[in-house]
Length: 232
Image 1 (cartoon, rainbow, N blue to C red):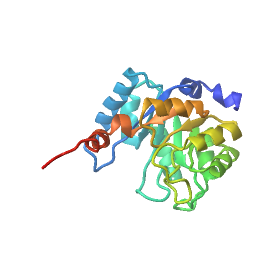
Image 2: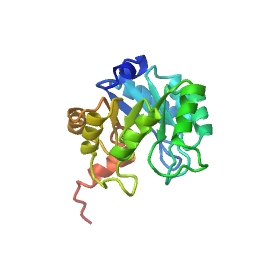
Image 3: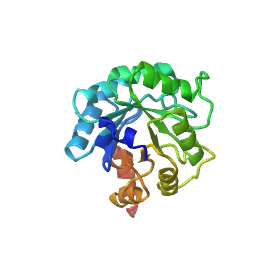
Image 4: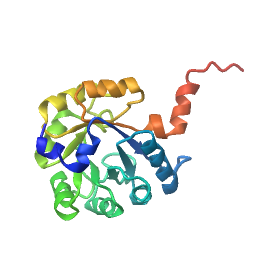
């Protein structure tokens, strides 16, 4: 591991801990910046070491409520490259108060034609923030590190057509990235139990992100409903 970047104060705070993704889309019951701020506060009280949040409004509200490293992103659209796709989104997230900016770093073409390298330059040189690369394959992780990403996350494994379509977390990708890359590796994607968190760390994760299993009650309810035996 790159000992220099892993010793950065913000990144060091994340090591060995749980990052909670506090996000709700416009069509979800908890969609509200203030609700997400309360959700982040609850995660903080529960021992989370960091928060991942979407959009300037939510990021601003969380920033004033929780004193934890904040990974910010900006979702625009719902398919293809939609996680912080443009430099304008990078600037908005940075201005809102994110410490780390997450962006789609897959091999897919970005809308608007901006390159990953250009966006990383905007994050580092203009906004003076850290960059987290959301990837779906080992090759994308290698390319992201070579382009200058400070952290690589498995967020998009299973969400690109060419990555493994798994029901659960992609532990193999975590393992391969941790063996190959020098930057910290964050495990994210379909992690829903404490046992899976432990397994992610065993695979070499620097930190682990959990979202839906903590912060999306409609998803949590569905898991319990699926285990019931309703009778008419």
